[in-house]
Length: 345
Image (cartoon, rainbow, N blue to C red; front, top):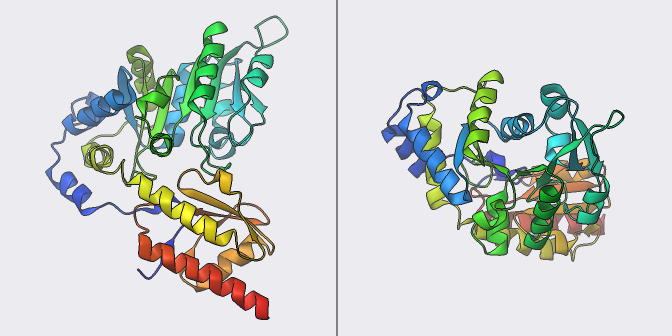
C-alpha cells in the first residue's frame, strides 16, 4: 500500500466482487422502471430498513433534497441540526428546491435535545410558517461520526407524532451507526418516515444512494428524481454494486471502527494533538492540532498518508475498506514520525 487515503470513505474503489456483479447484471431502463437489478436493489434496501419502498438515486444529496421536497410545501419551516450535511454541503438545496425556512439547532455530538426541538416548533399562522419536517443526521459527520442514541430517536418520533410532522433521517452512514450500536439498521430507521443512506461511502460502492419510506412518498420521490435530472437508464450496472454492498460489506464496518479507535488512542497520547475519545464511535477521528490543520495535511502527505483539514486547527481521518491494518500502522508511524521530528526541532 503506497498511499493511505484517509480523506473520506468516499474514495473506496469497487471490489472484484462488484466488478463481477456489474459484468453479469441483467439490465433494463430504470426510467421505464424495468431494470431488474435496480428493482432488486430497491426491494432489498426497503426490506433491510423496514420500509415499504425505496428509490435508487445518484447521490445522497439528491436523496436528502428529494425527501425534503416531497414532505414539505414552499414556505414551510424545517428543523435541523446546525452543522448538518443538508445545510453545510448541499449547496442551499432546501431553499432552492423546496423553498423552506431552515431553523437550525445546536446539539451535543449531533443529537439535538428533544426539548429544544419541541420549543422551536411553529404553528402556522398569518405571521409564522408551520414547522412540518424534522431532519436528523445519523451518524453525524461534522461531529465526528457520532451516533444518535435509539432513545433519542424514539423521542424525536414522539414529538413529530404529537405535532403532525414528518421526520427525515439523513442516514448517509446509518449502517455505521447500526454496527456501532450492534443492532439491525431497521431498529434505527423505524423512527423516521424517510431515510436516505449512501452506498458510496463506507459500503464501498462507486456511486449511489437509496431513499426509503412509505410507498406513496417514494412514488412522489420518483417524480422529483426525474425533475432533478436523476433519472438513469441502464443503472443496473451501478445497482449491482449496491447489492454487493448490502449483502457482503455491512458487517466489515466493525473493522473500520476498530481501526479508528486504535489510532485515536495512539494520537491522543502525542504532544500537540488532541482527540475527544468519546466522539470516536464509528469510522471517523477528528483531531485538534497545535499547528494549522493545513500544515498537518501537508506533512502527512509527505509520508503518503492523506487526510482532510476541517477548520484552522482540525483534521479528519476516515477509515474504510481500502485501508487495512497495514495502512493503519503506516498512518500511526507517520503521526509518530512528525511529532518526534517536531520535538527535536
